[in-house]
Image 1: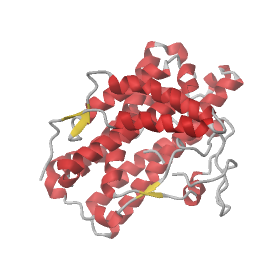
Image 2: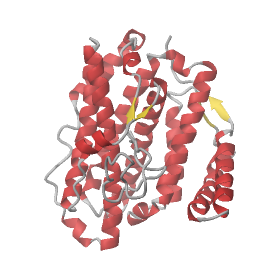
Image 3: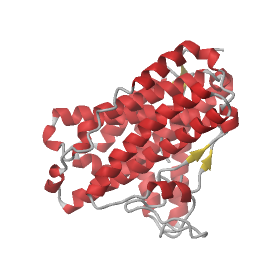
Length: 351
């Protein structure tokens, strides 16, 4: 789950004097964010709609298959081989990742607490399992950062950063996609590094396989929750939500991966091709959950990524009168991509 950023000047301190940003984290459209949602509404989730699926997912989460998979004592010696520039690239990835994982922990923990206060104990414990995994990820990343001499004060960062409110349906759609696209990122990096072990420059990457298993399992948990609210995936509302969140998550992924392509190049991965493969696989996976997905057969959606990237870089790099013109072109392209054809899926829905 990605995390919030309140509007702030370049030094990272807002007008109220609240927090400065951690090292390597700039305030912009791609900054990780924290979220809040309709907790009282969430507490009314009708589990009986998907009782069998819930029981199966609860047992799987309770088993905690990855309890011992993250070795906090793993050697960090390989990092000594990186140049100062490459270490900076690696550190930037760690900071953004730890903030994203911690934001997921905070959201799942709050949902868990609200469920318990509302007397929904089994749902509370279910989300406690999800929060447990996110905390484990954030802790592992935090250790890697401390080894680099970087300390991100996550508890205080979470308190100081303003949270963005999303309706429950938005949170479920975005959470599902965040977990599934995270799964494909980790598994594809893991496969690449297993085929190219000389590129494994840090012990973090030794744990991408169990990590991606957590992401995939979390996505399945959120899918089950969506099925408990059948109105979210039916009719025009379902089609609009599917379109908006697939488009926005894919757009953000493209801009994030390709703008920060140095990290992927450090691993010997072409960021543009990597982004394309992650989007294709995530779109295919989403067929099992969303009522509509984008059609990639004609290649238009994927092709437009290169045009959008060029327009985005032109906008970011322009000044004066050229800046609004470049921004207008960027907006025009992303809206055209948003409107591209979709196709109905056979995703199982209850209710």
